[in-house]
Image 1: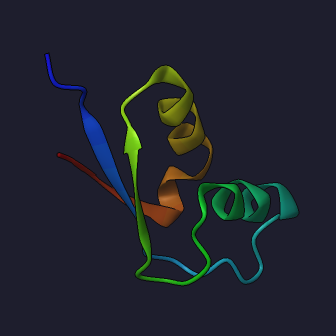
Image 2 (image 1 turned 45 degrees about the horizontal axis):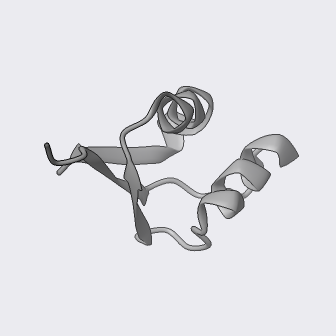
Length: 61
């Protein structure tokens, strides 16, 4: 069975965001608006999106 993946794209600026949110986004490997990463759809990834999902656009692949 194929593992589900998520395409996570930064759509809002990190300027004026709290440092914890900036660190989470940088830990994903995203530095600029429009950049994206492809992550496995796991509970850990979903937890990250619960914290900073308002900054991101998420698509299921």
